[in-house]
Length: 112
Image (cartoon, rainbow, N blue to C red; front, side, top):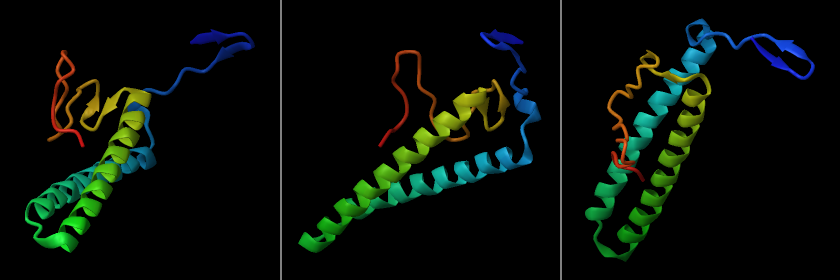
């Protein structure tokens, strides 16, 4: 237990004791991230295959929107996972199931 200025506060529950609601929220977020990554990839292909002004304009718009959505969800996941030190495989595993890990040098997988 930690002490505060006003007395003792209860310790935070262990990650294994998380509620089913939190676990479900994390699973939903992972699914959303996977869909957003797919949308981002498809938007990149749409941009590369665009012909004509209107198609290029639409492709740029959809690519920027997909990048923003993917980045937003990654930030949300980072906050959620770092709050309790969890990965989706369990506490302390660090695995991210298909998402590249950053190396010690700070270089890593694709980022929007």
